[in-house]
Image 1 (cartoon, each protein chain N blue to C red):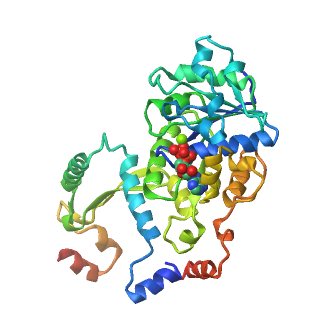
Image 2: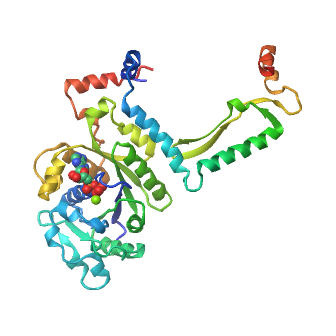
Image 3: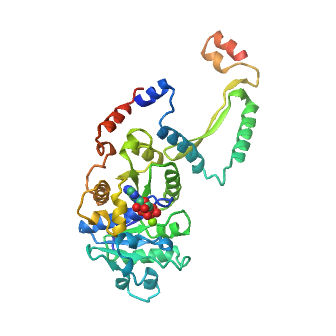
Length: 110
Length: 271
Ligand SMILES: Nc1ncnc2c1ncn2[C@@H]1O[C@H](COP(=O)(O)OP(=O)(O)O)[C@@H](O)[C@H]1O
Ligand SMILES: [Mg+2]
């Protein structure tokens, strides 16, 4: 954040348009770069569902928190999936319990 | 075919970003520095490189006539009177739009590389046949863009295609830079554009009304005596292209009003 952004924020003014331009560009290029003729939003949705189906066979996913998106850096586009795991199918709360104490345990059960 | 000839594609995706103006000014500047230079107008559907160079009344033949053996290459080349190291070759005639094939452009550029140190190919807008024909003739590329959304987006398409070819190096020129708008962050910065497109920066060209005046006269800025912001930039790009170790012009140093200094202070990163 620049001094100008800070002042604008404090005054409740709009941020400079160059920031908006940069953000919009990054988004639109992430999609352009994966060749939208072959990977449409429909296909992306379908792929997301199939990925979730596969993962859900093995672990219980927190569906509310799932995020699947395309991210681009240095002209490389990656499919990034964030799939928070609630528990394994066998019922054991394995993952976080091992690392931390019972406070975490309660969080997970909720 | 000369091993040392550099055949450079000047392309952009979007039209009107300054390819032809860059080709004309670079052509003159390179020629003036002593390198024999040919500028090939591959945008022959809407040709205007001849206009920018003030050579529109001297075109008789085109590259097509050379390939059809209607004339020799020497006859089709239009030499610039004030800059004898520079010659223009129109690839084709506006009336014969779909005559060209990539092989034809390749042949033309091979013929030119026997005679010249530099061949600059002024590319048509778009990513279709005209662009692909011009691409086939070149070994290097300069992608021209403006610090604006649509120009950068289209440049990205073109870079995507160039990356799948053997073209190397691919360098970036950012044209129509307005230092005061960049200072007030109302224009994408040089760093923004370069980071987004991930290309090495060859140079920038400042927005300059002298460009329009010189176009009216048919005399590229690099041919004229006066000083102007864009001329300085074109000369800088030309030097860097010829391998001279000179720094890129920094828009931050190109405006020094008190207001701009204040605006730059406001750009300081606070966190
Ligand atoms: N640095 C600049 N400053 C001001 N005007 C410019 C600059 N570069 C290009 N122009 C103007 O923009 C228009 C398009 O330029 P041109 O070189 O024909 O673009 P292209 O060949 O990419 O279509 C022309 O009218 C030209 O005079
Ligand atoms: Mg043009």
